Image 1 (tube, rainbow, N blue to C red):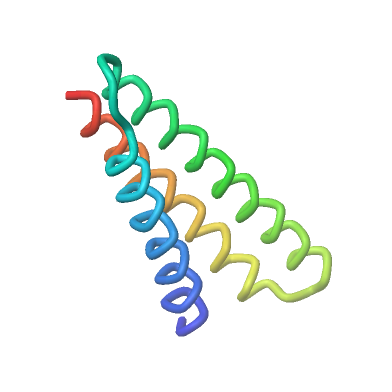
Image 2: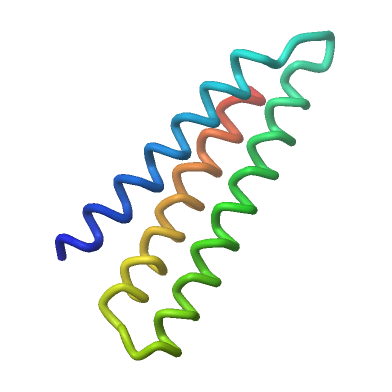
Length: 89
C-alpha cells in the first residue's frame, strides 16, 4: 500500500503544479476556456502516461505497481476533472 501513497502523491503533486501554473499564466478575454483546455490536455496526457506505465508493469509481472498506477490514474482523472470544471464556472 505504500506504493500507492508514493505514486499517488507524486501524481497529485504534478497535477497541482500544472493546475497552478496554467491558472497563473492564462490571460485574455477567453481565460476560462484556455484554462479548461489546458487542464484537459495536461490531465489527458498524465492519465495516458499512467495507463501505459500500468500496462508495462502488468506485462513485466509486477501487479502491485501496476495496480498503483491504475488507481493513481483514476485519482488524477477524478480530481483533474473537478478542477477543470471548477475553472470554467
